[in-house]
Image (cartoon, rainbow, N blue to C red):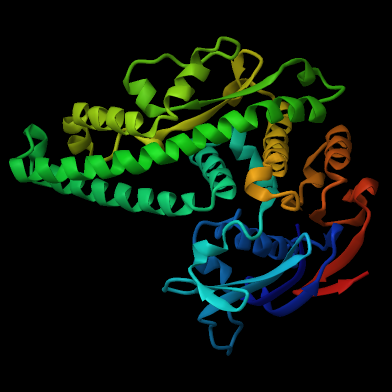
Amino acid sequence: MYVSDLALDDFRSYHHLVLSLKAGPTALIGANGQGKTNLVEAVGYLSTLSSHRVGAETALVRRAGPGEEQPGGAVVRAKVVRGQRPSVIEIEIISGKANRARLNRGACRPRDLLGVLRTVVFAPEDLVLVAGEPGGRRRLLDDLAVALRPALAATRTEHEKILAQRASLLKSARAHGASRGPTGSVLTTLEVWDAQLAASAARLIAARVDVVSRLRPWLEGAYAAVSEGAADASRQAALAYRSSLLAHEGRPDPVPGPQAWVQDEEGLRDVPATAARLETAMADLRRREIERGANLVGAHRDDLSLFLGSLPAKGFASHGEQWSLALALRLASYEMLRADVDALGGDGEPVLVLDDVFASLDERRRRALAGLVAGAQQVLLTSAVDQDVPDELAGARFRVHDGAVTRV
């Protein structure tokens, strides 16, 4: 799989751009602020319908210059070649309105584009996957789950809507003093929302657990490869899905090595059983949830725990070890998607995006990463200077300056 053509209209810094690409490595070289990251961000957006840089889509629409009318939206188009089958995908990001999409020039829902183009994005922000808050790790799992099964995008959206609606009801109940004991109507309404939230959360949790089990063997190998020759290579990388439901039920935190936490994960694959357990937990937490006006248990409070040896990486890993682990997570994601023949087919290898990564790495990690990804079907990388592009990834090269892109 690779992107052969990319077109942007009013996306970020680009008024209008048409760019032809090829399989293999492509380097986009330019100083900071010239627009090179905007190009790979557009490719990633077509893959996941979200940006790896910002949460608000309004930031993706080009800001008009003095005396110029502000664009009402942005358009991103690409031709994606998978085997011998090209597909043209298009997304229109409309300020203040629902986005519109087209697949092979026919109108479709935006989420129907999911799965046509798959990407794995490496970026300096990836360090937060190890050292940051749980939300980034949950997003990683959800993005991978949707990449494996695009139909899960509907479950993800449904879960977010139900979560917001139930939180609103809890806040309303708190305002009316229901924490002392919800009235019959409030209780009945909450029970309805409990069942809906539990059902969607259970499906999402099961999908995340599936991703974790698939990632586990790839992460161990990727971390060993990235850390080769360094002190951190002696400690094996591991991961575990940490469910707020298990914490509510009194399960201890996992320790790599024993299989207890793997067994806990396996129990979460049973969607009806997990939904029933979540409903019970919500009933137990009813008064506390109303007092706080917040949903206290479920997929939105879960986390992905990362370990080096027997210690959690967050708080115990050095800066270099955190970088190695973040890189290993992305490499494991790439290998997992590439290996998933059922979901991707033999020609479904993801496009690799390396956004200004090499400048942040020491020489050893730079060489290790370049060697590991050199054989990918398509690699799109950005760099401020030519010297940061490894020899292993020599290929097509473009200069990016002030929104203009020229081939070298």
